[in-house]
Amino acid sequence: MMVPFVKATACGNDFLIIEGMYAPADLAGFTRQICNRHNGVGADGVEWLFPASDADVRARLFNADGSEAEISGNGTRCVAAYLASEQGKEKFTVRTAIGVKPCQLMARDEMTFHFETAMGKPEIGDEFSVKLAFREVRGIPVSVGNPHFVVFLEEFAPGWQAEAAEIG
Image 1 (spheres, one colour):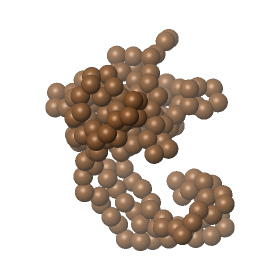
Image 2 (tube, rainbow, N blue to C red):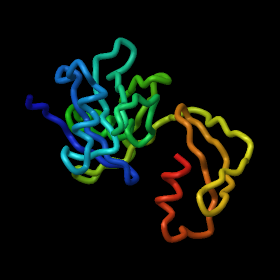
Image 3 (cartoon, one colour):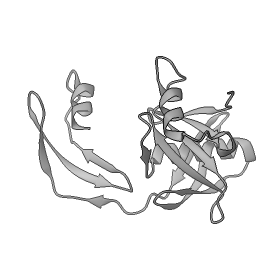
Image 4 (cartoon, rainbow, N blue to C red):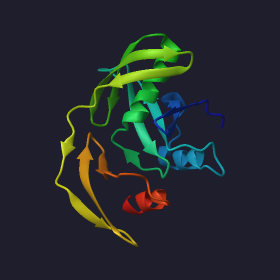
């Protein structure tokens, strides 16, 4: 099956943008296959776009592992850039699993788009430690609809990506 897509990046995250009319019955399985960096196109996730009654578009985000996520700020901005490229408008609303997010085009240079997206007020938890294989790190849980664990560093240590993967 041929499925047209656009690949977009924001702050190091890459997403495939696919119109919902091409959605297979098994979104999770298809997403795992197409996001595979060795045997597929490769991406952090797929933003599946569907019509919405209360927004310009409804975006369902599936991570590369096939799990459905509430939202990605970077993914939402990629959706807005796709819509701007296709429709030529500067303001969009994107329905996500956690609500409608307004997006405003701030600047454009050919195919590079700079969007501001109102993500809402972050929920910030209390600092706690996570034990890793070789050390312990302290961080703060932060959520704007999807959970993050923020660690403050003076500089990145060698092998930081493996530690980040261990945290989850």
